[in-house]
Image: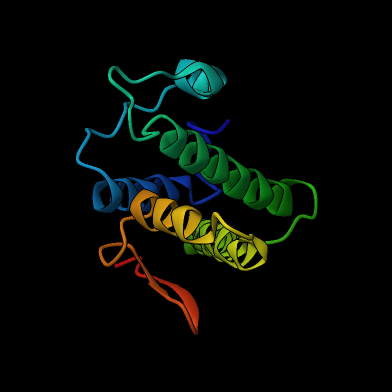
Length: 142
């Protein structure tokens, strides 16, 4: 379903997530297959010193969730879904995740700067997400 249905805008969603991947890391984007989707929690990367395996888990899971939401809107609610809608849902999910992780650091004592630096590194500060201490993160999907 997540790789075959043409009515849920998934092609644009997978293209968007691949673009995000390329902005955040220099590794090659994995070939998305049903097997990879089922086994994403066990995906390891050799010499994974920078939590690189966490990034595809997040991106693939969020893409599947966006596709699922669009599919349900189309199949269960019998509403038309524009092909770009799944991509918009995905972008909002990722924006929301980054914003929540960043905001959670406000309440940390002692480790706040370390955690903020980790979040900046993870989301490629300046290339994908820009982190302003006053206004919070802004995400560039272009």
